[in-house]
Image 1: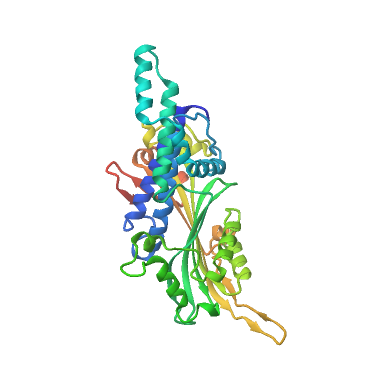
Image 2: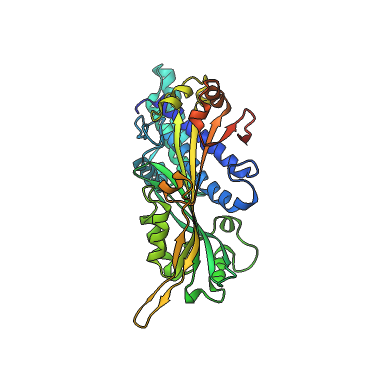
Length: 395
């Protein structure tokens, strides 16, 4: 893509989709995952969507001075991985770059002088101002959640104990940006720990100390986002390396869960969820579905000419095969994962359950509905509509 106006329009549409999805998550009673049972998912989604929103805001500013940007127009509708990695690099260099750029008042003064004296549009200075705003935005968001990186190391957001076997279990989340599919992926996992060195509530103590100051109430941001890695520090670093190497979209959840079960004798994955954000469709820009694109192109306002889909995949262990002790060797417990053989999608994706969701502005939904192709477009998707008063409801 080379047109700045098209890039700006694309990022405005993508940011709107992410913002509205964040609102759907916050309004859990109306959101795609219901209310109380998924409070943890809401917290995890909010953190990651905030990072994705920050990235999109920064990209929109970058598009005002850089007229080339790589987007996967034919498949995902999201920026390619290389742009995500370049943004992370730019974020690390933001402070140095801001020192090298003139301050805003100087740039504005030069712009006024050029317009008055030369009577022409100060395009070079406008790009310089946009570049400064871009790095200022990166510096601003670095103080909070930052931007969405290629891989976010795991955090433990909850810890409890299984009363049946006295094992502590951790609720862990992490994210990755798949470089082949060019899709943001969010993961959550419930995993039990049978290590001897976390017995007698040692893991709970480590977790509580990580999210609480030496005295006083829990730190709100840490309590909501969790602690870095696992409470079991003996295997935390190795666990992080495993996830970084095994979080690609091409791997089924069964493959990931089985590999984890085999790689760690004392970690027992009980539930694994993956949220696949995308594809994203933007009217007049993306190209990966002729039917959807044709209908979106009929929407009058470009601000409403988009559609965001996402998928939730889930895998859970239905039982555990006990480990065996022999005279010369022993084998660890083994998880038996449930695959829903009654659902062809579950069989193909190697999961226990799968849900399809779509988020669409009211004007775009009307265009699809008026075409008589709503069933063909949305199919099994649970559709959430963004109405004029910014309320998201399930349809």
